[in-house]
Length: 212
Image 1 (tube, rainbow, N blue to C red):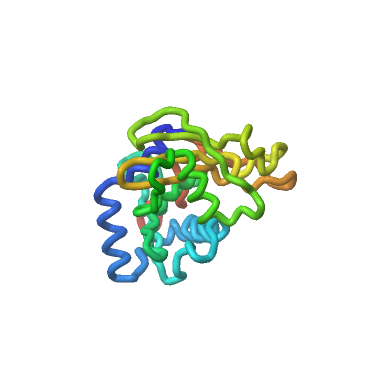
Image 2 (image 1 turned 120 degrees about the vertical axis):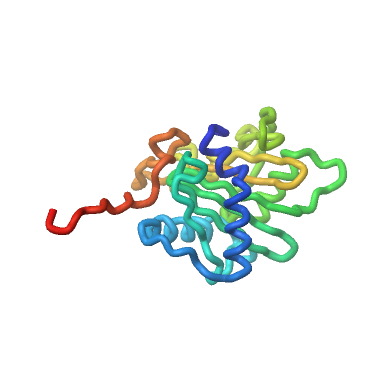
């Protein structure tokens, strides 16, 4: 799951973080008409996944980054919710949500903290979150859902809750998942693979000479 596209979301380039800060300070959107559909979808996913205390204000700008770092189209946002700073990145198929300053409990393991945080911020009905660590990478300690402890949200149809992984390091606790709705009427149109993540925005218009 933590392939090059996932890591692009988990570890934002410094230039993208600077652009996010500037947009937040100025409270103004960055206009890129060919990204309008992606921006709408990205906002809808944030409001669907997060509980109201943690959703962004509707005036919060989402920023499109076409071919960020030459790798893929990304939509990013950053906002505060109480004492938390929440930073997100999305491709067409994946979404990462990072929590800065999440309160750690003394002696608590990364997977237990991840489960407690997920239970708090995500709008997931009666779903119980449990995670198990599976190693580490550039993001820090990483892990995935522990279905032996809490079971599946829906064992038959892939959905974003069951597809979730976490990461944890000295500065952030975060969650990475595929944008899967679940349910028999929903097409499975999400994957970590390149074909599902490289391009998201509409193509750039071609320059056509007058009279051509």
